[in-house]
Image 1 (cartoon, rainbow, N blue to C red):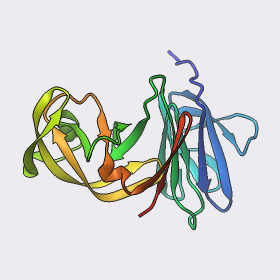
Image 2 (cartoon, rainbow, N blue to C red):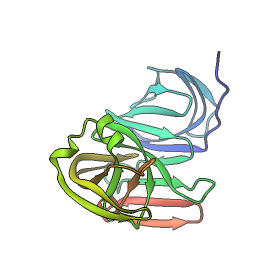
Image 3 (spheres, rainbow, N blue to C red):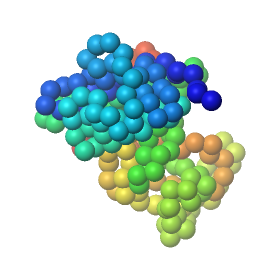
Image 4 (spheres, rainbow, N blue to C red):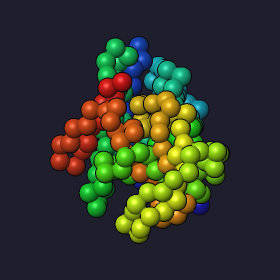
Length: 210
């Protein structure tokens, strides 16, 4: 059964031979409805060239993935991704959800994971289940304990090869794997302290500093 179109207020500013603005306005399994540079909405099948330097890689009921100049970009519902020209800073614009939280669909070591922006978390934190799914040998990390709202819990401190949010990718990022109590990952300060953070109402802009 064909799923209904999901209308998404998303935009990706990609560097190609010229800056292209690509808005995702609808999704079907295997297809995405895109608006290129403010033009007429057009349906693209997976594998199609959207505009020079931009190819639609995947499309599901919740997100579309494009490859821009050989780099993958996954756009989730409620998220804006901006990628400036190579000479400029790399930025991502996030939109708050109905509860006022900033949720992002990111990647850890190349695997997809949902994360909550949390400036109160010293490091990126995620559950044992997510670590196992992502293939992270967390038990080889440094054991310890952290204090949470539910008391002190055991954790393993690890070093992540890559953490990616939109077009921003960092290498060798500190994180902790928590045995219980995390329904989603926390995007903590081990990532955020390398960003310039600017909030404007329901939008937050992260710009990579180093």
